[in-house]
Structure formats: C-alpha cells, structure tokens
Image (tube, helix red, strand yellow):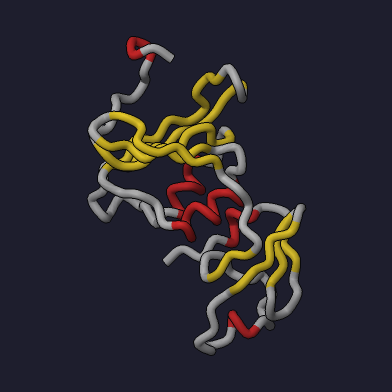
Length: 153
C-alpha cells in the first residue's frame, strides 16, 4: 500500500498489529488492557479492505512493545496477525504469530467449580490444543469465543 493510501499515519515508535481478522480489534485491545483510560495513543482500523484477507483490522499502539504473554494470547484469537515493532517510523522487527503450547494467567476458566475461580492464589494455566484450550486444573476445554475468556483486569 503506498503512502497516499494510508488511512492512519505512521507512528514514530511502538507496535503495529496488522492482519487481524475483521471484527477482532476490540478483543486485541482487551488483551492488551487498553481501555482508553491509561493515556496510551492508539489507532484502530476496522474492516479495512485487504488484498490478502478481504477485510482486516489493524491496531497501532505508540511507545509500547508487546510482551511474549500478550503475543501468545493474540495468537489464539488472531493467528494470521503480524506484529511489527516500529522505531523511527520504520519496521525494525516483524513477527508472525505462532500458537504457544500453553498460556498462563491470561484466560479465565469457564468452570465455576475450578480452583482458579475460588479465592485461592492460583494462576490460570491452559494447554493450547489444535481446536481450543484446556484448563490444566479441571480439564475444561474451551473451543469457541476464546476472547470472552480473556482475563482482563
């Protein structure tokens, strides 16, 4: 895409999450804990025409690079996304997402009887399956709508 077609301007430094499945940008913001109150500068494009995907979402977060835990969870809801680390208005690093073997502390278990939902100091742990995730404590499997189980503080 040439510069005259940009819908959102380049950022000086930070992270651009591109090729997000259309309609998932708000879930990406939830994973990153961005709710508009922290003062971060964020640009969001939704349902943007894409040659590769038909339509896509894009999120640009200035002055922030993602942690590996955040990238791992993003891979569950946006496996086609790319992470671009921007420095001095240029892509310094580009990362294609890979599904992790497990995620820790980022999803909540839907089983109300799971120990992670009791008042115990236990961090949630999920094994990543081909078609979902499985709670390591109670074996509950979540196959659909993973974004609804993101543990956002």
